[in-house]
Length: 438
Image (tube, rainbow, N blue to C red):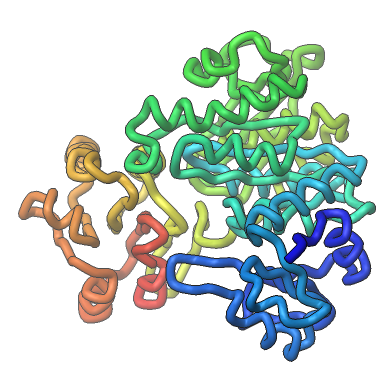
């Protein structure tokens, strides 16, 4: 059977008003359904069902399921989805900014989107659709009206960022930081550095530019002599910032290489973001906005108005307590800065609730032990640790629970009142389920 060409498939994509579907549970009428395969499923088996459900076309990679004229046959459905996304990206006259890093990818993406949306029709990755399927779906949702695309790229092994760059072909890039994330897949910290650095190498080869935290020596070394737009706090960068600890929310001032240097004359940007470690993320958004020539006042307005969601750096006051909900994800680097920030908060009764960090492989025991050592060093005594890894590493003085459900039972029976509580853990721990009992 002859394979359907990307050109023919693209014509169908256009006639379907760019509607793509990959989930039989969410069939969309008039869309193209891509029959993806996973470890425990083969969507080729649902080709006929997708047509019956109202899809205009179906793409399969097993000949026996290509039983109708509206079913396209290809050698590899996933690769075809990626090639179609790349083809679509090439038809559009817009700038693509790619974002990766160990921590803060989504926060940076949302802050930058808030700033750029002041002047441009901007599309950004929805949620965390940042992998080999999510990146193509993001690109395929672009229209001719969009002027800038912000594409988040996640990875847990070497080679993955380069693959995603080959699909998205970014003009501009941002690595937020290089930390201890996905150590198991990358094979240690040097592997993480090499893997994330694939973005720099791709953009350098393409002749593009990168936004870089110039205070970060690791990123500076990784970028070498490539074309950089810089931000930071210690030297005369393209954008320079200064942090002010007025309360638990991040406040800061900024200027540029060529503008006002008297900090007393600069406006204070007061944000609704908790966690002083987010200051550099905010400064990055300023840098991107400044590069795209957005007015200073509009940049400040966007960052002051932005309210975090999705359990990221959220401050929430309940009837009984003040919660700092940072339970979307965790790795040793993000856990460390969150604990240090929490320890520095001016609050009387602090409760720290931490969940296991995933995907650390052989490094897991040592990294969980380091976090416990940090808690001890910061003299945080009211601590609840959740998960088998923290339970194994914890001294007797901390309360430990093997599961979030067990922890929920405890805090439901032992009401917590008048406390400031940090909740931080990997996505799989689902620590946000504790919120209702606090």
